[in-house]
Image 1 (cartoon, rainbow, N blue to C red):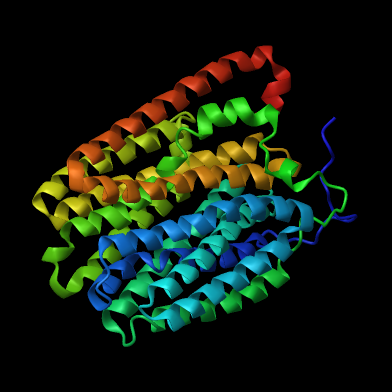
Image 2 (spheres, rainbow, N blue to C red):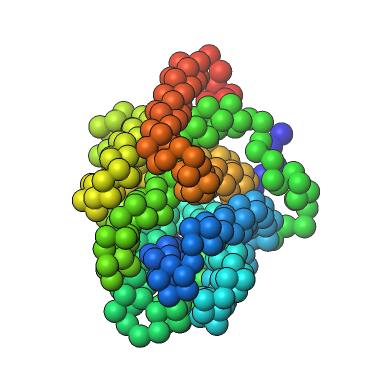
Length: 413
């Protein structure tokens, strides 16, 4: 028999807008995670960083975020949402202070990126689970949490990019602004109703990190194949696209990178806002359509690599934004539908861990491009996306067809 969820003795006092308190903190931490991306151009200009140093800073972020996903999910199920979220918000503010103090010191920037990665993991896993638990209507939790993160990713990138391009002290001011906003979001977390209480009688931490067997078939078949293309879309648009044309933009490199991010995340957020209509139009097959959007964006970037045209990079951005938004919403909705309350955070953590594998796409491209050039690699990623989407669609059809004959699995999935 499955263990009953650990709940407080009395239901938490909530209002229909309680989820906004958590969403505010999620947006602040999303801002912290993405504020560095448009500033990569600045570090190339100010510090003379080569692609190797920039790639290292991207990798360190992933190194922080992946174990952060696993631990944040397990610990929030064990100790409650608020405690872990408070720790994540504090880490986000500290990360920005370290950024500001580091200046152009590579080691200091690596430490800051590592801390930022952990804080974003908390926002994604704990925040998404908490928002879902504070959202009464079915399906609204996935949409609200996805939009909250996307607003932070996009708005933070826009603010930091504008400050770095036109304000003084570009290696300091953007980070101090974020640290102040993040510190304020602590107040929102303190006011948010707790939905899960601490329990000393839960299973071991190793048991918390395992995906329960009842979900594995559907998760591996329908969610895992599309997950890497969530942030794979962002990685191509943010890191690869602007790098193809930066040399021809003069002093506007930061502004161009910021514009690309705004288009990408603007489309991604709009897709999530229209999720109900899109889900109806696509008959629930959102994930494969998201991978098609990724493939189109990657193929549009291929001629941009040959011509250096900024217009092609801008044209690819909305396709990659749609791929990001559709794949994210599809995965979150699937996880929140299949997971029992006891398993929500850790299954969400597993999903987000797979999504951030997509941030290795730019790293792979940077490593192989001296040998192959950009075009074959972008085509290969497009093919991989189409294969992943096709596999997810076939698996979903097979599982849905088998569901009436296996009602015990239907409930879990």
